[in-house]
Length: 403
Length: 228
Ligand SMILES: Nc1ncnc2c1ncn2[C@@H]1O[C@H](COP(=O)(O)OP(=O)(O)OP(=O)(O)O)[C@@H](O)[C@H]1O
Ligand SMILES: [Mg+2]
Image (tube, rainbow over all chains, first blue to last red; front, side, top):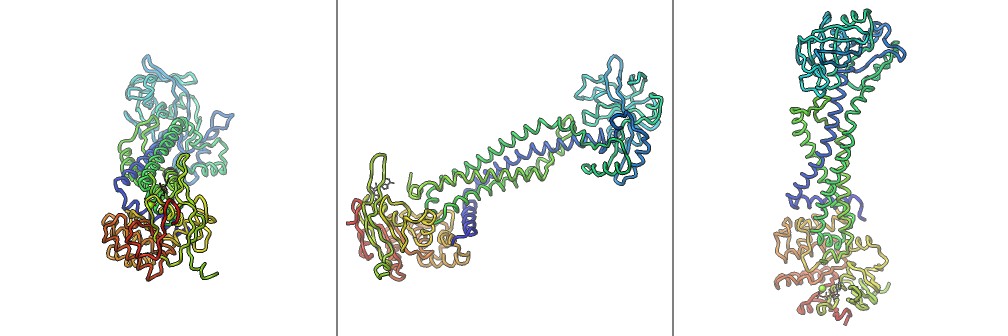
């Protein structure tokens, strides 16, 4: 006789009337608290995503580009790098290629010195795979035929407020001379041509000299320890790796993601904090809804009794309260999203948070927003159900006339 | 089925309701056996505490007797589950309580058609029937008013309209006029009598007022939980 659609209709009707004709202040406050709960849930997740995104972008932009081609395990250098570069360059979608030679070195200025990695590059190629040449904070970047000049990161130079200031050269400036002791024993003096700041602690510890200069240091040509390949967009690297292999590149081809371990260690501790805060946030939201619905069922105790007396099913009554709770939760999610998109995201875009891996803004991922919205609505379902279920437990006579 | 059986809508046999307060037993109803005929307008009277409300609650399925048997419209009540009883109340009963028991958030019309909506009637049917019921109690022009905008007597008439919306087999009323002035009380009793006479509405009404006696078909007198 009474179908489920009828029941839902009556529940929705009662819930609607209760919200529409009930206390507007209570509704507004409840929605506000739900919105805060949602923002609380979203904020850390978005910051976390922003943090991960920023770190990944830094790894790609300033350290490894999208794809790194390395010598096979037993080799130290890539054999015939020119042929590798030719093959890689023939693949559509490849935007840049740069061969690098890496060597450990000691860089010294006056009594200060430290151990850093020196990368030698062809500046004309390097600009196609790396943002470092665009991030000079003093002086200029290298040009192809520079010989006695070096470009260093701010963590090496010091004096720019880096996190590793105590290990730096203590504030060398453009024009200063530094002595570089290479691993093969060669020592050379270089004039500092430029200092760069990538905002990323890892790449800020690199020094660059030209390929031409390195050839003279090593006394040989064509030494390549890695080839960086820039591809269009982040995330589609695997298909390029396949194509390179098919074209006969037999070196070790890795995507930047294998270096994402750097990112993972940086962001790992945030995951735990984030989970904890989310769980607490959900509890607070659930308890808020519980209290709101509980107060409502207590103040409407007699009405609930009357509804039951005139033959309105208990399930209809319970559902009317669950609907209200879900309504508050959904409104809270929507309000919370508006707050995120219209206030917080623009604010942090204008005032990014400064982290050792770079400037971090809030990044809202759709799957995160949906998961958190669903969690909040689920909490509301439970929190709306419990008090209304309790309310219909008592006898009709007690509900109407009891004290 | 004999004529007699067909004409009886409520029968009780040895109906008792005993309240337990701590270790004390309060027998509010004591082995009540009675029959109510279809179309009867019966008043339940007696001193305060004699068990009038208790009897009405047992017959109206708002409470469960401790002992005895109730048959309503051919159905043995003790055989019905709680949810079957809820549907029974929705389909077959109408209630008017002493306090004007309508919902403050709904308009008069919405209050009235809520039970019809719960029976699965369409919005249009609900409105039509609701307006008819309001017409019957003389409040058609107040359809969109909320309870707080109405007098006690008007609210009680809204409650009566709601009680009538599903064309109940039995209308239960527990001192429906106790909170009203004599004019409003008169209006409501006249309405009950009209419903009973014109439509053959079975009505069971608890009352204190001796002057109501000449309006009803029959008076069931209670004393100490027993029919006298
Ligand atoms: N919930 C209860 N718990 C305990 N005793 C109760 C309860 N309800 C009623 N009683 C007792 O049962 C008896 C009958 O009560 P009932 O309410 O039926 O009387 P009544 O005839 O309706 O009285 P009134 O005219 O005052 O409304 C009274 O003695 C009352 O104290
Ligand atoms: Mg009473």
